[in-house]
Image 1 (cartoon, rainbow, N blue to C red):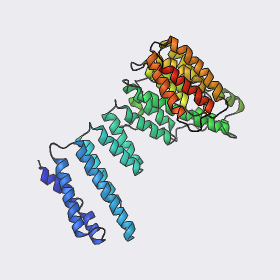
Image 2 (image 1 turned 45 degrees about the vertical axis):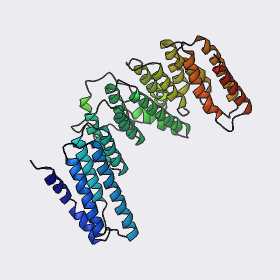
Image 3 (image 1 turned 60 degrees about the vertical axis):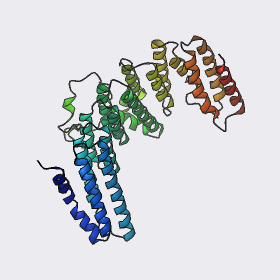
Image 4 (image 1 turned 180 degrees about the horizontal axis):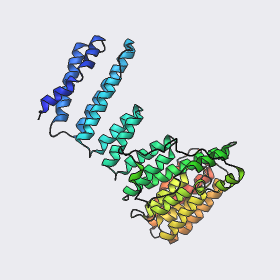
Length: 401
């Protein structure tokens, strides 16, 4: 088996054509080329040594990225248009590929690999890397979230839901995937509401929802998981030739679809209801769900979703500080600080605070939560003086034993 020097020489010799291009086109001087060869040699010996660490590979890739940026900058300054960037990018991809093969358990290396593919808009390579990363780290929620968010941002909610639902089956130790799945669905509902608000947009939103075949929450179905992916772990797309033609929606069909549960917030509600049965669920997680739904954009089903979360918290954790804190803030959802309705909503919230302080199971914790909520409001420079006076008085009252 070849030793470290022989392996290093093999990888260094593959970069010789690029170095010759640097010299013939005058991108780098001879002294600079000798310097970068020495630097590459040091890096190759370091990453090929038996005791190499993931940080060594990250430093090597970062150095190659800086070299590629310098090459591009000098080509622009010297007006050299025939120098290809693909050689440098391919070399960086090769280093990151070797890195994840050498340290497959390093999540940081996989993230760097994915980030570089995303920066270069290498979509096909990104999908392959993500598939391999998910197979290697199926219990890492951040990878499932990255995959789901990317698909959702690209407008492919079917793939996004598949990633999130599979991630929810694997990641049962914390609520990260569940919260991000709910956030993604709330953003989708916001887009659907925006379409329905435009002229002719209601029919488009209804038709888009009706054409989705995965709007049901199928978290309990594990038998068909492997049937939906190919050998590379990618979702198998339906055959366009065998797909049925688009349906024609008449008035009767449209009226029936207007009551589609998915367009009325059924999916976020189902995510929350299934999350309640998981071992990680506690008052803190329930409060995170409340904050997520309360801070989402203007969604027609927001009030119903928030009330459902509050009712569940009151049933499972009555008088818990998290439950009381959410109940206090409910009247202020989607109410601007400078809006005319804010004083009335604040008065209702303070009434809830007064009753909660006497019934909560942990008064110091509730006081600390209220303090963390009031202080940012007082930081607004344009806050109404009367409201500022009330909130300052409330803070002083909370400080008393």
